[in-house]
Length: 71
Image (tube, rainbow, N blue to C red):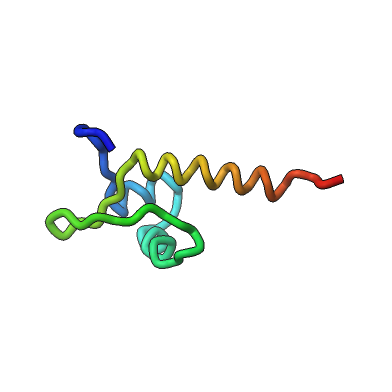
């Protein structure tokens, strides 16, 4: 993380992924998804954008691996 790290609220994450805030909450509760840990700042649940971007790249890799033919 950098000194100018950006953090996304659950609402911003919901907008980014086109899902509801409750879905973002559920994703965070599911250890299989390996979503980055939230931090609590003044009662707001936030995730570092850089960690979410790493998570996104990992998800793309999983999708490619799952769709690759083994013929």
